[in-house]
Amino acid sequence: MRHNPSVSPFLLIVATLLTGCAAMEHVPSGPPKVLTVQEVRDGVTSNSKKISTLKAKAKITFMSSDLNDPLNCTGYIRLERPKRLRIICSKLFSTIFDVVSNGNEFWLYVPKEKKLYHGRSDQDIRYLGLRFSPNEIAGILENGEVFRDSTVTSFEVHPEHWHIELTNPQELTQHHLVVDRYNINLVRYETYNPDGTLRMKALFDDFEDVDGCRVPKRIEVYWPRGNTSLIIQLTDISLNEELNPDIFRFTEPENVEIIRLSRGGEPSYLRTGAIIPVLQPLSTARTEPSTN
Image 1 (cartoon, rainbow, N blue to C red):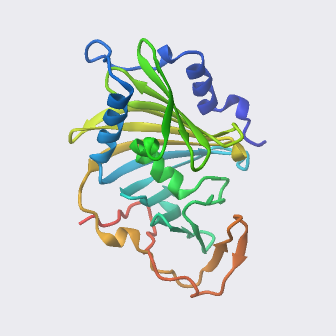
Image 2 (tube, rainbow, N blue to C red; image 1 turned 30 degrees about the vertical axis):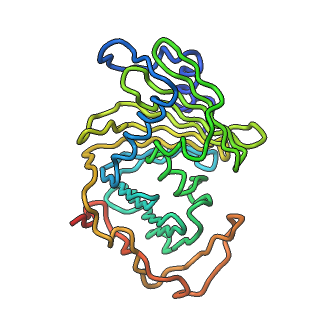
């Protein structure tokens, strides 16, 4: 039986949040702050801009209408601004997939299937029902960027949160933000298509102070397309360490089928060797990429 969205843990959490933001947990550090919209904007943005690189271990769960059951795996996440990303997802000591993105292009290696997918970083990966792009994940991890190129159209003050609505005049998209009034943490982020339909919803929770920055250790994301949800739980978080450039380079494995994803997301096939060398994939979950 396919995954039933009506009992998705993510959707249950969303339903709880929609009944009122008072349900969100926080540890008050004093009375709620009284700030202007510009001060809230500066607070969220400045915290994000303090982070140039991020490395962490991760527990990752995927749920999708394309999957019979949730996919649970463990792995590593490496992020370097702007939008350079690597995620390794493994289960039972075997790599399920290894993906790298430089912000313009991504490469996804699936060892078990001996396949290498290549596409634009702003298009959906479309493997295992993922239905989201590497740039979306990088943007979520760089969540202070939500204010970029957007105009504030609404600012509401609630007892424990600020509700902010933004409009991007170039993309004609709208964004709804919920910011904690105690710690100026962005705790919910929704983005809508030009026609008003929901594109993506992200929840940020369990914040930790790391080197003077507030980092959410739990991130939950939902995309209506494909009824796809993603849960990331971060541990062993390190910020602003110099990352080895080899993390974001891929060396094409031998004897793999290379699949180029066209602009529309449908695969077209290339001969082996047609893709440029970029990143050395890992063979097992026991091996961590070098960060020296």
